Length: 637
Image 1: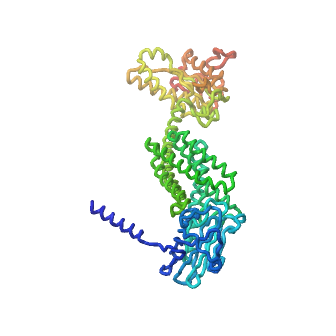
Image 2: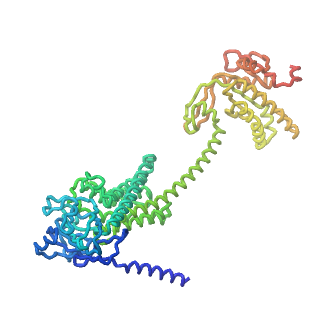
């Protein structure tokens, strides 16, 4: 094991040493010698090192320099701002103008390319005494200076294998002045390849981050209850705008009408608007772990800076950049501590979010140090955010996966509950009331329908139940109902309610369905009685009453307890007719309103009597259904 680790350590050391030992050409005393460099279509050189520097002077060629007879004010190491101490230990004010010079010695006279990044804040580029390009308006009269952010590529052919570069830079409004990014040199094809790669990388970052932002905002619009996607989406949009205002694909190139001042404020927006949306996002994500007071202290400066950015001119607003950066870093530290607390408390996905946030924080620190020219890297915040978004996406994927699993479980549970509820409230009731679900039912819902009502009751059940224990009573009743219920459903009816040992069933389609069901019930009862006799039990008798007419179906009760029911004179009449089966000692009785339906279906019946039932003012004919009897039994009727 020790040998294995020793080998790995040696390989790592060798690779790192090899990388560190590769010395890049540097300029010394305003000259960089590249005659020994083997240029290719993929090799580029950053023109870093000591450039000649003249403060408050505009020099465009060797002829101007000979005429002025002035020595350089400093030999700064580029890239650097002229307010930094790298300019020969001198610090110059941010507002002003200066000339940089670098002589580049080349191996041949092929066509070369120069990539010029943003110069703070305008420049004129002269090569071998010829004006090659400009950015903004650079002038010795600061009132006429206008900044611009438009990286450019220039193609030049050296004279006598030499490029004599004079860069005149002027700054009026920005907080820094000078070269904050190195000029890049290479063959024409190499510079074009470098520029194309930079554009593609930045377009990819901008597009992906911007689309992710819009996606999260859309998620909020479809589900406003959760505001975390809104704040995260707005934060992504802010960072995407910063990508397009600081890189190779500068917004000024794509939309020339966008003022330079607005571009600079958009570049800085990530520190105030970004901090604002970022803090609100994490508050929504971990509401119990981010204290409201601490969040308020963090967000108050962000709100203040947002207001000041709109009302202050760029020259004044620039003075607030350092406080903004300090506030943003303090806010990141505060959120980082809160996420660590959430991770310690084992909040869901806190580990993934913490890892992404650490990467994001490191890149934010890098951007602040890079903007101060304290380190010579590049802007990494978009890459840090992209890493954070990736890990955040993994966390969201886990959340969504669990949510979908939970939804499936809830759906299964809801299906089971609905099936169970259908045993308490028949689905036919929902259909009558024009309701899709039992959740839609409200107290007082009702509808008038014409139905056929069937009442069935066990005769002398009280006497029969006295011979059984409570458990035996329940077993007996359930055994009886288990045989009757399917018959009613098979004949297009449904059970409205159980009344002790009795059944009230409704038939919404044809009255003949109730008649056919009553015959099938008696047939099943005969089979059940044979089974009871085989166990030495007494057979049972039932009476069935049927009537058809208008009924009111609806929901009665009070707010905390409701049930479905039918209320009408027709229901009362059907119940009274069932009770008369005992009086006339017949198994099935039908009301006179059922006569025509019996004849249409071919059922046989006879008039038993014309009675005035309790609660009725008019007498009612009642018929006995003869089809319940066998042919032999009919002979004795």
